Amino acid sequence: MRSDWRKWLTRKNNALINDILDLLYPPRCPVCDRVLPFRSGVVCASCLGQLPYVGEEYCLKCGKPLRKKGLEYCNDCSRMRHVFEENRALFYYDDRMKRSLYRLKYAGRREYADTFARLAAQELGDWIGHLGAELIIPVPLHKSRLRKRGYNQAALFAKSLSSRMHIPYSDKSAGRIRATLPQKGLNPAQRQENLKKAFIIRQNDVKSKIVLLVDDIYTTGSTLDALAGEILAAGARNVYGLTICIGRDGGREELPLE
Image (cartoon, rainbow, N blue to C red; front, side, top):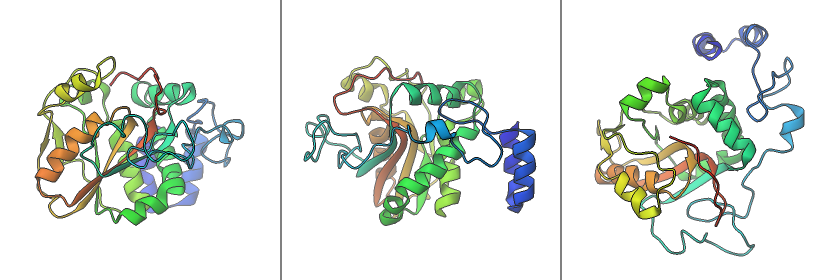
């Protein structure tokens, strides 16, 4: 409810209205979920210094934190090719972010998406700007899952990021036409098979453009590869990815359900 009111009222860019909304519907820290003190920022003081940013040692292809300094690619990307050009992630996926993404996806904490977009613009804004991206597209949900959840967390994140980076946004360009199984528990080959013919390009606004795909979490890259393949087939010049979270190189993190 708070995020709906904020979306409607903040179009006027009125600081006083924002303050009133914060008093009526206090924002919560996306890490610990505690109510934030008035005008205290988007992350509470105790969590601010513990945010699990990926850092400077990351895979040049998928963006995973690397096990050793001096490496260029993670274990996965050194053995396989990806369709997308490059992916970057804001945080590595630890227990704190596991709980945060769960609340974002299943507990209605839609406002987290705006916080993550703000942090992504701060931390990865230079990289995003360097890409020359001309369109931001969120990884779509199948209509059955969207109907059940009520919103697409990737779309909320992507739309806020689009506004902050001044890059056009579209949630109409691509659709998920097949209700795939959750990727959790599938091996890489099964993940690829699961996503075959799962996506479709609904309107050809990607032709000759550099596209930035946005999702909440990166695991093996199967989802980004499947959607990037369709976008490139529709005539896009290049496709990049950006996610809120990503697993570690060689990690065995328990992934969230889709």
